Amino acid sequence: MHIFISVDIEGVAGVNEALQGQRGNPEYEVARRLMTEEANAAIRGAFAGGADAVTVADSHGPMRNMIVDQLDPRARVVSGRARPLSMIEGIHAGHAGAVLIGYHAAADNFGVLAHTISGLAFRRIEVNGVRAGEPTLFAGHAAEIGVPLLAVSGDDRLEAEIAEQFPAARSITVKRCINATAAESLSPGEAREKIEQEVCGAVERAADAVVEAPCRSPLTIDVSFSKQLFADAAALMPFTERTGALDIRFGAGSHAEAIGILSGFSLMAAALA
Image (cartoon, rainbow, N blue to C red; front, side):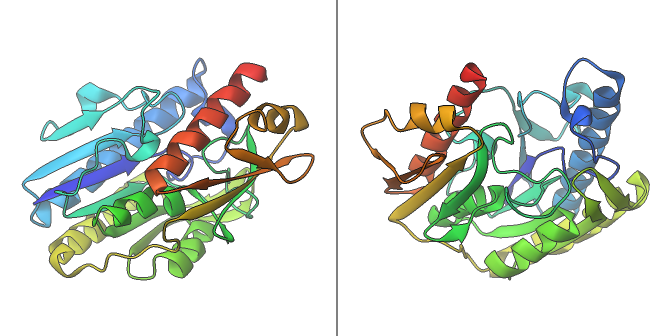
């Protein structure tokens, strides 16, 4: 049984400030170690639950954050950018389930460091009228190829999103949102223990997991950018429709196609900023 794990940083216990996700400062070095250890907890849980193979995707920012030589050596690692499937790169139909660790609430939601794909680029993303967070898109792609979402860790605001969009998946809540940059968090040790136990239980029941997603293809994606300049650039693409000063709309035949286009917009915004 092969399990896929995607690891972000903003939903990790003890992380609640943007600086902790940015290279070149001591806070980032602490946060990437916390991220690495939550990944290890999920890996241990997956193997304890019956997995015989685990692939872990480093999925924050530059997508090369985890301290690789401190990761459980049983896991294979996907790292680096730009990846066609971004945070879910490496998943395939042979996986028995997906686990998302260190995730966070959607852009335009109230949550610790809430955003979708890029806090710089996007103010809000909707897919078929549903406010889209990263699980909406990436676990949506997993579902589209037949892989169920087993468990997700992050804050209580993310838990509410998962309960609505992926009700069969387990939520592993490691902190309570106070505001965008403040949280009441479990200790790192307690968070890792909880992640390991919950992932183990989810993987043990993977054979019975429900494949579900809030949106089905074809997809209509409405994007609200944080700056008009970003919308100006996106509107140059022949497949987009301008719907407002900050807003564009486009269609996609699959979650994978939507992910690729949104990732391109994110890179475009970074270049323009």
